[in-house]
Image 1 (cartoon, rainbow, N blue to C red):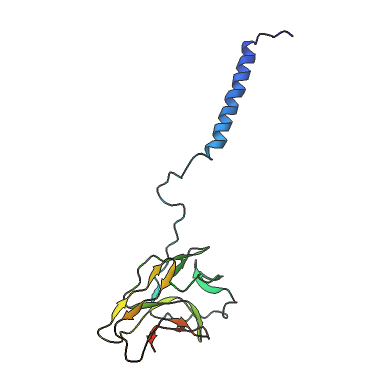
Image 2: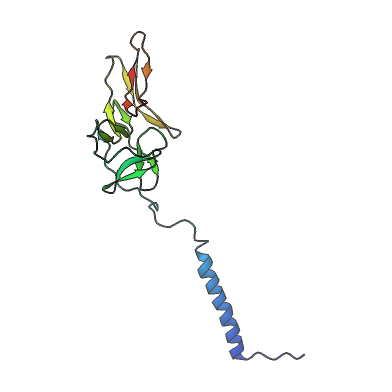
Length: 180
């Protein structure tokens, strides 16, 4: 079998194919090896949300209580049904999931989660917890390992009383923290 001597055109075609394959390989694998996005800001920035209510907001007149496993939430100018937050605490709905609200809580206030009240839907809000005695100091609510620790008064409890943190009543109403 005799070997033919490659012509310049054959060599040009051969190296052209090699260059084209290398270029395509670089183009398509460049995205895989590109690493982190060079943009300094994160890819997702939660939309701005209104400041939480201080004090109970007026109940919203919505057609009816939400179905089990859902809550009403005002988002993007409309009332939508979303899954409830994973726990009691100040959360922000970002359009697809609940995220922990990083804002510090107002002083001497307790978070009241959204709930269906006697007059309609009540959005989540902060309420003032009255000081039981002048020697009591407010310990603000805070997040600890992804769990909301309700704010409470620290001090000598009234005789025969213990602090009861805020909780939902069997009918869905929110009972603020108090001594009982």
